[in-house]
Image (cartoon, rainbow, N blue to C red; front, side, top):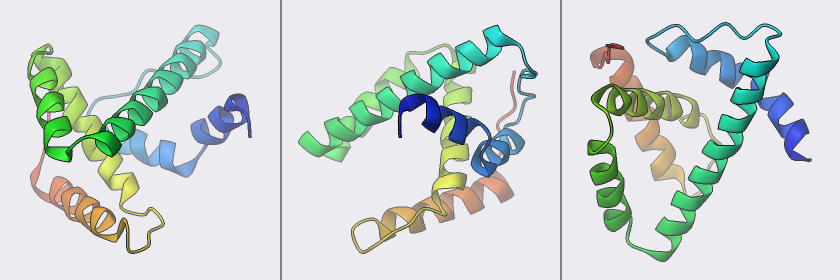
Amino acid sequence: MNNEEEWNRYKFSPEFKEAAKMCAHKMPERGDNVDVLRQERKDFDAIRGAMRTIADAVNGNSPAIVGKVLAVELAGQHRTLQASVIRALLVMFGIYKGAAYDLRNKAAVDAAEKVADLAKKDIAIPFI
């Protein structure tokens, strides 16, 4: 599957719709606005690349070191962006909790489910 097919499969997926519902603020209207769709595609590619980079870093280093670097970098961002990143991570956990698993990632999927459930009940991060 090429990137264009993968992008089209993603943007119309139930997971994308679920992620949109979980966001605390209104997502921009997408419609047929070519510029919005082009930016979404660019963001999609960048986010996928960032996740691959983080996964590669964890593969070669201690997760504690990678986590510390991520936390320090996040803390250096604009305060509103910090909240938005955490909000996005909560959405990620909400979707990832349904991921396929075996013994290697079962604990990760279980942890995601606990975080997602906690976020639904007790965590509200307003868009300010």
